[in-house]
Length: 385
Image 1 (cartoon, helix red, strand yellow):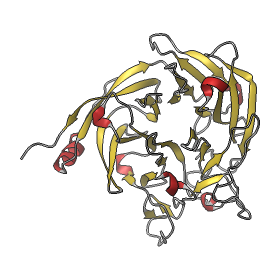
Image 2 (cartoon, rainbow, N blue to C red):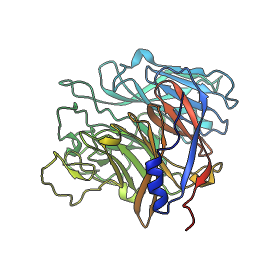
Image 3 (cartoon, rainbow, N blue to C red):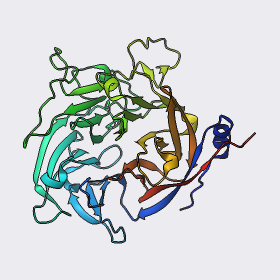
Image 4 (cartoon, rainbow, N blue to C red):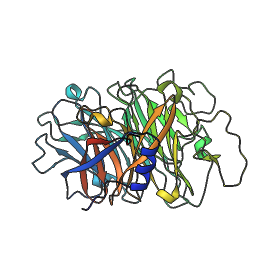
């Protein structure tokens, strides 16, 4: 696969502004995958990577990387694939090394979003036990339109609770207000306590606990299709890549405290702009995106991670995100709470996800079938005057 590493016009603009622009490259880790959608670590100090394929398989890649990945769990019979469906996310419990628990988010055979808990096999760390499946909850998706906007990421937050992103369920041509309606779980970021052996509890400090008519699992709302989100492992800051409607793709970047009860605006706003175009709207009380780009540069944002690894110091503290359609990758940094970004890679990949291993090193998932490791061996600095 040919990769063009720099989009010159953007790098020139960044250099003119005095920015340090990290050079990034990509080292193939594993190929020949079937619609990979995510790569994650179990954080159990074994150095393995786990790869979710949309058709329903989770593969495990050993720390040696030279061996072919093995099937960790095959749940293809449970998912409806593909489009916006299938297996969308997997996350391992922070105490996975001792309890062997992990969670999956998928679109089931009825077209609804399901979140389930599994355990690994007692006799093999490289195999899950399908008999341990426990459905935590199912979120009904609208059946009156083409399946769309499922969102679909699982992450454990800095507080140890499980966070779940779910899209608003609306078809592309049919905008609904579900993201603003607190009786629905659609268009929301959810927060639940999965510390008990069965089911889940609602943390008592969730923002809508006790609010009449509101689902207590909701942590924040007003998202259209929050496809990938992550927490900064150093600061706890939250980053959400929310796919736009017609014109704007957005990254919501907030501190952990600011994320509680945040309203990201959809469908009153698309990015920082009133929706539909030309309409008037109030942004009072809304959390507007930290970063956005126009559809001229792509069509579907893929949220990433803030780099906290040690291998590439020039990237440290930089947030990477991408566009699924154009293959562009941006590097973003903040100064005095103001974010700016520049394109640092112009690839021919269909970037469906980023990944982070237990050391904080970053990976890119190409939906065409390959997982790459991100390399940043140098930095392009502003020329001396």
